[in-house]
Length: 443
Image (tube, rainbow, N blue to C red; front, top):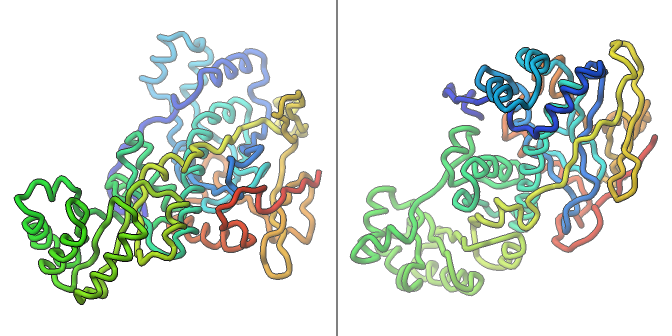
């Protein structure tokens, strides 16, 4: 659910200047050369997965659709371009009427991807497509990196609840995008209210150490919180002595205490001690939440601990060491003239240096084995083989400039869970290795 679903107004500024300047200089030169209207196909893909990743997660598609819809050149934006002399007057006139009128296909949000996968395909005139490059890459590189980290953490958590709480560790707008991507990747809630407001993500939060330190005693702090939020609240028990805090928490809230949170120390050892103490005090249903600079490896190391939920901040919003997916946006086919019926010609960069690309407008499908488990990502041009016809991955997102594939965020989250479960079991292991399935080309 988004703010639109909630009936709430949200100001969405123009996304037209989330753009590198060379997009505009290319536009101006193409307009002057008469090539700007040539029908073109751009594809967004990555040549390799980030170090340590064995699959990627598509996140940010919904935000891309918003960005395309709001890619407009209002008077203020045009004035800026004119004052800086970034483009000439004919180009400014062209921009003043800009509305993307082409088609966009892509992997649905939450799907997994592999090297070469055409995660997004943008089709239209060269002029209207090239301008979208930077903003599309900015969104998908960031969100997909966060979602991949979230997916690994979700796998390591083994069904235990995950709370995104990294807003204080990143840019304020990136924090909202990160919470959204983390939800797609398997997290259950977020601490940042802006993500709840904009995207309908469940929000949680109780108190920090400052609240305990504010009061004369820990008991006073617990009493104030329970009186305000009820016995089902979560009490932070490691400001002073953990054992004493747990005892006080149960005395104040009773065995109905919702949860205790541990934010420091040897989490494995402390969690076992706290669980034993809670049970001895009769608080058998009180949950244990752990925080403190967790990543997927720390979460996996706590698999045997009596932990019910994890709160993750810094490592999540920085992609757990991989803050980008290195996706690129490349022209793969174009017409030889502005004639709408002119045939497309495959094009690709061929120079050496590890940045080769594969030309041609591609389809993508996933081949499964006899048990329904993925065994290859198959990419090709031309007709789709009959055996793969019902396994195609690209879906239509924008048709003739109109968005046709909006969906609730929960749909993307559910899709990711299903897609991940369809990969070989090695996909959920944290060991390094090659992509969990190979990419095959049929050109």
